[in-house]
Length: 381
Image (cartoon, rainbow, N blue to C red; front, side, top):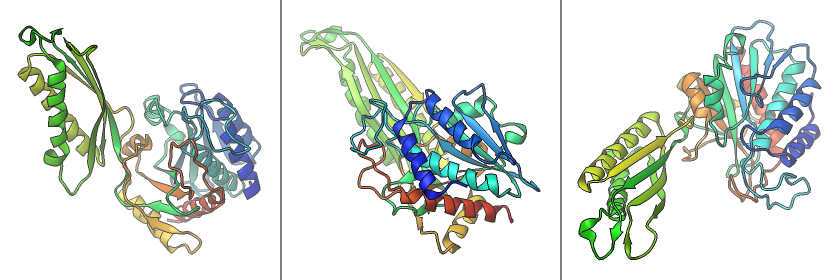
């Protein structure tokens, strides 16, 4: 079984070899070698051709009543590391700035334990590529990776959290992460000379009105007790001060705590864009791309059990958390399989996706212990 020092060495190696979505070949090879070095008596390893950098490991139970899934993401971000650590990224411009190296290490620690202590139920460990982009969770589902004995009855996964004490477990009933939708709006009218506005069709004026109207979506179309965000963060239109712009592009993002809320916001955007097009006699093309980044909505029954276990275990520092407006593609999988996502505290002043993120490594063993204990408890029910 992997010791705490083994886990820290593994984490530091993974931290040095970060790779972007669907390019995680070196990471995949290291994970495969690490798993193959474990006791293989109860293990079955699968490397799906459909998603080559993914890996699935099935731990065969001695009296399986269910298959419990555990997912970890393995990709990194296009961030130039600025931590100054001796084990900093060796790949220029790429860093585990979201802590997926911590995620993988915890998963390997839990898997290592069950490779030597056969579980009652089957355990499925899914090492998933492309969480940060390319919707790896959605791809894995749509490519048919979860079938037969590889299909979990329930799914669990964690995300590190620098705002929580190292090793603390955070969770909540309901939504943990918001869902996200990318917004692209193209307004196409008729350009012309600034001195002859009657002969043109100004897309910048129309874009300004559209942006103003979008600000009412959250304040007037969403229950104020709930939470949602529409941010239009980029606008590009015009070439010079005395030319009326015939094309303007707006880019933004939607965040919502439930899929229903996101669909409501999407529809209001469609209505506004259609109205602006008619009012200003121009074409307004709205593109909404949610991909696989659905809200992470925790299953009520399973999450109640999870929280109850963590609260009643003296060695676990459990903290009930508020929902976060960040996105996570595990939400897509939780829409297909009941399950729970939770936080693992890593206590750092820097935030996720920061070039200076330095998670505290004492969180790793504490996370392994808490998750191992919960899975053993779950298999007694």
